[in-house]
Image 1 (cartoon, rainbow, N blue to C red):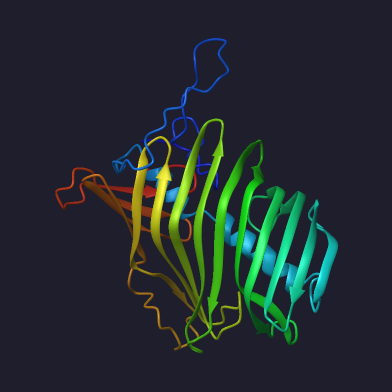
Image 2: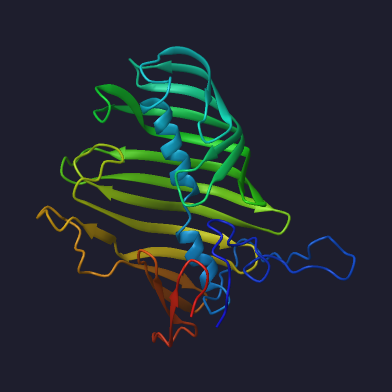
Amino acid sequence: MRTFLFSFFLFFLLPGCGGGSGGGAGDTTPDITTVPFNQQAKVNFSSVGNYLVAIRLDIARTLIIDVVDFFTYNTLTYQTGDVDIIIDNPCGGSVQISGSLDEALSSGLLTLDFSNYQDCSSHSTLTFTGSIDLSIYNTETYTGSGNITIPSGFLFSTSNLQITLGSESVIMDGTIEFYHDTSDPEFNWQNTTKNFTLSNSTGSGTFTNYIQKDYTHKGDLYFSKYYYGSSYSGRIYDSDFGYVDVTTVNAVATCNSMSDICPLDPTEDGRIKLSGDYSSALIQLGSGLDTISMDANGDGYYEEVLDCDYYRCY
C-alpha cells in the first residue's frame, strides 16, 4: 500500500508524491528532479495518485466562483463606469477591485488585488494574496438575486497569485478562461479552460488546454436544480513524472431522484482516462472513494485496481 496526502492541490509538491527529495544532512536546499516538459509520463503505482489529485483540483473553479460572487453578492452589483472599491471578506482578508465596467457593451477591464483573502467555502480554507487582471467579454442576466447583469465570459491572468493551504503555498502563473454556454435552455454548462502553472521550491505542475465542463440545469450559474455532472480534457504535467493526457469516457453524473429530467445517465459510471507513455488508467470518481484501474505496460489490460480516498490508495 502506498500512502500519500491528498492535500487538495499540492499533489506535485509533496515529498514522495511528485516533489523532489531532500538533500544531505544540514542541506536545506531541495533536490528537485525535473523531467522535460514534453516528456510523457508512465502511468503507474507511483504517479497515478498525483494525477488523480490534479483532476480533483478545485482552485480554478474556486476563483471563478469568487469572481462571480463579487457581482452577485457584493458591491460590484449594478456598478458601471470607473471602479475603485475594497471588499472586506467575512472569512478574513480583503480584495481591492479597480478598473472600469461598461454594462452596455457587456465588457470590463478590472484588476483584483487580494490581501490574505480567505476562501472558506470548501472543506479547507484557501488564502489568496497577489493580483489578477480580469477581462470581461460577455455578460448575462442573473435571476438568482433579482435581474442584474453578471459576467458570463471572462479571461483572467496572473503571474504572482500566492495560494496558501495550511503551512504550504504555491504561486500561480498563467490564465484561466470561463464561459457559460446558454445556447441550449435545457442543458447548459460552465466551461473553464486552464493554462497555468503552480509552483514552489519543491516542484511544479502545469495545466495546458485543460477544460472542465460542469453540467447544470436551466441556465442559471451555479443553480443545479435537478442534475449536475463534470467532464475533463487536456494535459497535466508534473515536474517529477512528465505529462499525461486526460479525456472523459463518461461524464460524472448525479441526478435528483425526484425528477425525470436528466440528460446525463447516472447509471453509466463516470470515468476519466489518463494516457501516458505506453500506459493508461481509468478513474471512476466517487463522492468519497475513487477507483483507479491501471494498465501500466500498455497491453490493453488493466492489471491493477486501486480504491482511493482523500488520504491514500489501497
